[in-house]
Length: 232
Ligand code: URA
Image (cartoon, rainbow, N blue to C red):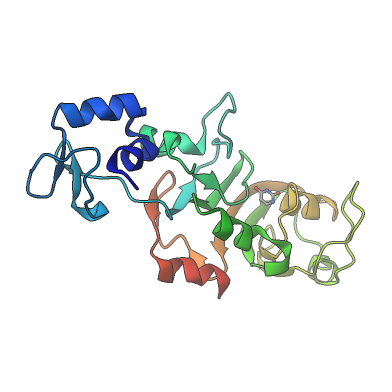
């Protein structure tokens, strides 16, 4: 790909604006040599204003989504994209969230510009485990685990029962729940179906990939070995 298009696609500006960056000599190689729009240079050797070029496409980000942020590009309030460098909102192909977490849910969120990977993770056929920890308004009754594991629980206004899910009771009002689907407000609706109410919800892992101490609002790029843990 031509340097001009590569750099414009990474969100540094329109083609016209990036042309101007070349003219001003702000795009160089690692030794400081000025580059031109049709030069061919390895991604890792390109500098803009002396800094490394943003990561190439095929980006997978692990984010600790805080409560109060929406997994949307154009909601009125705070968006998970606000936590990333502003330029990244203009990347082509675009970064998308891998599924969604509710505004009031915190925890592990993946973002990627790799559409095939995104579909592999969210596809119901892949049965990727999503692990949540819920804080409940009332003590667990004791029969929730069997109900969730049964594969017969039908949520309101749905036509097919939920796939079996695994419940681990952590405390009378705290539980860890592993689901393999991603239905709308699924975890909150599962507990609502048992007469309970989720007061706080955090996703702690997808597959064997966890947050590993990443603070709320934090994010980092994953390497392929880390991405593979999603499917373990
Ligand atoms: N289930 C929910 O109810 N909310 C989420 O954000 C994710 C799963």
